[in-house]
Length: 198
Image (cartoon, rainbow, N blue to C red; front, side):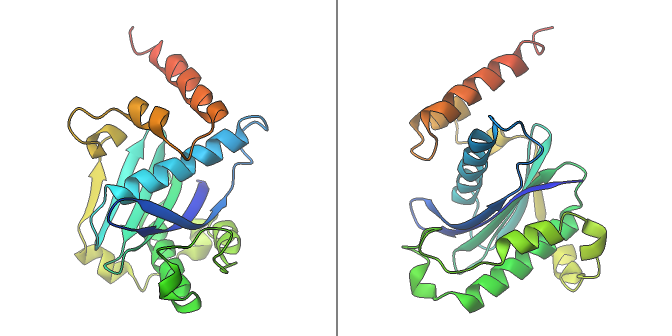
């Protein structure tokens, strides 16, 4: 069980703005880490943009699950974890982080904020502490709310995309991803698709 990223974003009418993020990319090779991190940011923004306010959802992308919670006040959180990480614990973490973030940061800074301007330092600590979900398990006060809340599991990232829209096109148009990350994506797609033909 592993958590790879924890992000706080603001969902504006047109796009999602990254406010703060923490990453654990230590399980990836040194040369892939920056590209993997950029893709986690890209994926988090895309999922928040495509999720309605007041919803929680889990989106499966290959071997990963992206858990998203978009509050009615447009503050959103995303956890990217492996498939074995318990969803309930991921949503407990998101609830805790968003509550804490909204108390420690000024709401007028959310629409114009960025990781450099937002002063919230607890994400790395939360990401580290929640690597072991058993330690975080006592935090079950949100369990009752989660049981009442409809959590949507999208089968693939493609199910989030609009009709006729392709992830490849979004990647190539993305301003968040660098040239190296786009090349990494294309290479990974080719390597993964070679075996799908058989």
